[in-house]
Amino acid sequence: MPEVAVVTDSTAYLPPELVERHGLQVVPLYIVFGGDRTVRETEITDYPAFFEELRQADSLPTTSQPSVGDFASVYDPLLAEGKEIFSLHISGGLSGTSEAARQAAEGLERDGKGGERVHVVDSRTAAGGLALLDLVAVGAAAGGATPSEIEARVQEARGEFKMWFGLDTLEFLRRGGRIGAASAWIGSTLKVKPILTLESELSPVERVRTSSRMFERLVDYARQRHESGADGWAVQHINAPEQCERLVDRCRELFGCEPVLVSEIGPVLSAHTGPGLLGVGSIPQRFLS
Image (cartoon, rainbow, N blue to C red; front, side, top):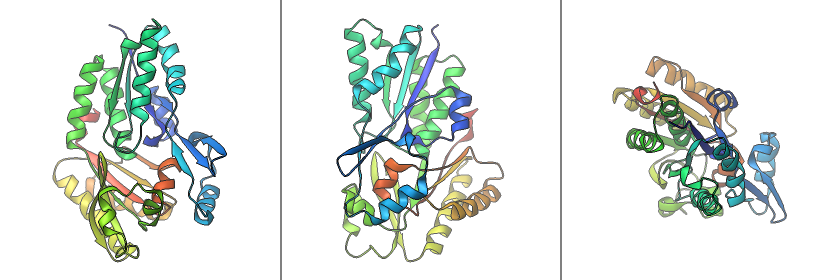
């Protein structure tokens, strides 16, 4: 049975040590500054400088999916080694990344380079959700599962995964046009703290008045996830390291175990949400064993 390589994209924001440990291939998305400077988000390492630029910008940077060629350049050598590929990506409701991946696979198939061995899946999530599903996929691949079996495992896990994100403001989502179903909150709620979830697209959960209340609601949600038996937990943040550390400490007490991952969300998603985001979510631990 051919070995299965797992490919993802940079919007999972997996810690580098997990990427290396599991042999994940990561295809980066792009940040476009002012229409004339395009940078792979993985090449932006000075996050404080990026957030300062974000705060001061008259117009927000835009984002761009990987090109078909970006995907082909990752797939081609893996296929040449005789591998099959499971390629899992950010929700199609947020980005055309999965479609670019499919086009790359189709092109490689037309060229007789084995593109039919590429299995592209839309995760219907992003950030921590995509990260956890990536880990589900690499675990299944390491256990000898086929791409179809990996997809079944990932889809089952996706059905039991939930994550909440608390934002400092809706202003960045409004300016970037990615506000989705939370658009009804615009006008009356720019001065409150929105809590959102991601089910293919961003969806509103509730509004709270203060950062402290937002923090406590995320802790409450972590408690609900633990009580439901979903103890494979993750925390992510945007330019909020101290609040993130506090949330990790509270969640560690609740779940009674260490997080699967803690990381900072990078430029592509940050450009749409702005700094100050905190997120917590989980899946049942059995998907990660």
